[in-house]
Image 1 (spheres, helix red, strand yellow):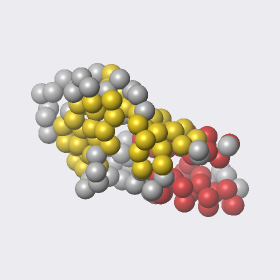
Image 2 (cartoon, rainbow, N blue to C red):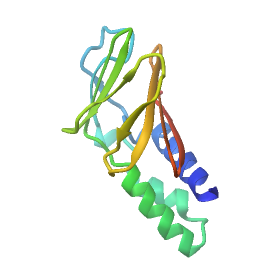
Image 3 (cartoon, rainbow, N blue to C red):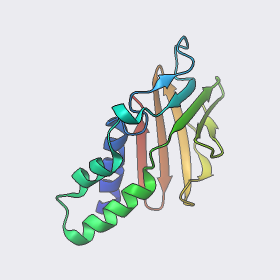
Image 4 (cartoon, one colour):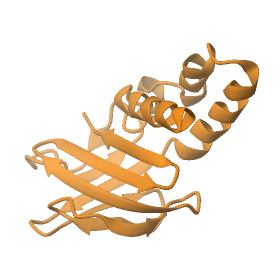
Length: 146
């Protein structure tokens, strides 16, 4: 379980470091919330592989390889993220994948992630912050946009 907590913590750090959205272009700049389409600016974003290496460098060599593999699998650098919301639902679509849709008030729904893992997912908006929570047998992952 310690490895799961470490991976979840590193995932949150990676997201907050700007890997996921980096400096983005908001298509709907007048919107007060997060609704819009975001495009990854690779020149102004962290290199995901370098951040993962920094995160795992102090682990022993066996744990390091496991953590590195899981982090790379769970943290792809999406090129495009589309967020839409209504009072009842939040939808997030990344690249050409089907969107994740959840109730806006944070109730979890069953979802199969891009890696094929079955999870319970929930999302909530608070102004310009989106909190996504993914819970599975492996642990819990919280991602918050900034």
